[in-house]
Length: 227
Image 1 (cartoon, one colour):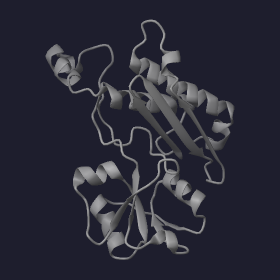
Image 2 (cartoon, helix red, strand yellow; image 1 turned 90 degrees about the vertical axis):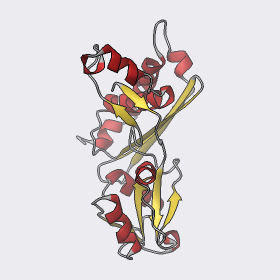
Image 3 (tube, rainbow, N blue to C red; image 1 turned 180 degrees about the vertical axis):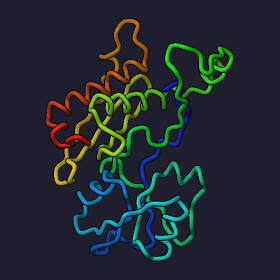
Image 4 (cartoon, rainbow, N blue to C red; image 1 turned 135 degrees about the vertical axis):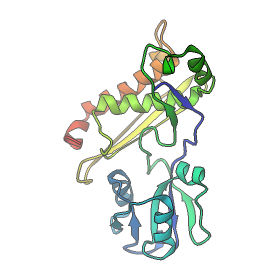
């Protein structure tokens, strides 16, 4: 990951046409195992309906009454300006609905150890766009997922939050069938983890790896299986 720009590091949002939290067996649209398990952990009576297609297609299924609600990323909705009068946007509590690692971030991927595109001028231009807060957060989340051995379809949520020189990171993961879960977090550890010559990005990556190691020691790999 070369640079991480200022981004809409927002939680997921629930789109609803009715007050689905009051309805028994409400139909909730999502094809994400992580979101499905996060939702049914709170409401085991929900009927989960697979939901694919572009954002407009998903919103239309809610507006037309096929679904009582759907879960989408707030960042995508905001960037696309995808809103409908027929549906209501409700931001979900990140304590219960942790996003996927890196959700909402805009990044440039480049070869390590050389200027982007092989041009120093281009590298300098892109470097000026880098947002350190977003970069630190995404670096911690990616390092956590890498150390955990999670894939892009693993039911794992992780969110890092940078503030001044500190960094906090929280994770929630599920067994492949969603029946068991494990959560943990580290807060304000970055000052301890920064060693001589280490950058804030390296310290952030170290924090993510430490949290992964801690959760692995608690049985995270057994829960995730090969996913």
